[in-house]
Image (cartoon, rainbow, N blue to C red; front, side):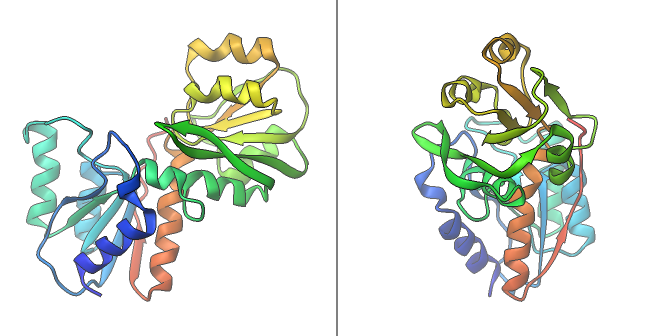
Length: 249
């Protein structure tokens, strides 16, 4: 499999063309086509992750948060350094934002639901007409600490809106910045809303409606999709590496 065959395969797998998004999904920085030997995965296209991917001799870096977000940006300053490192290292950059949140098998939300063994699953939460989240029932009652531990939500980004419930059965999940989905979680009548980060302006709505919110940190809630793609790529017989870059946020 060549580099461009792999990137085209990813785009088809994730159905990126059907998703409206502020991210430029797909290949963001090209490279000379060649036999694909190694793929690096990271949440963010930071200078750190790009440099580490080059050190690992990866041919392509697959990320959730890329470098281009719906408007022209000068290739200068930090942006220049990231692009320069990738080009000089012969590294292709590939991004999948909303498509990787929403994918029913490899998406962030699907993977969170899978780790929690969620039952009676159905779609939840919309982005520009596309359902991206998951709603369902835990197989048994779990408390917040059990859920956070199962998901690896143990870092400084962990936040909890606690309304006094000791355990939970019904949950809704939207990874990343899920504040805009709090009202939908309230309307759905779930016990717990699981997301990445939560804003102050939804606090009282959650408390007054009796909705508990577990926010594990934006980064930590979005390692699942790229990790799932890493395993998928391993099964294709391609060498892979995951580059950690936890922001604590």
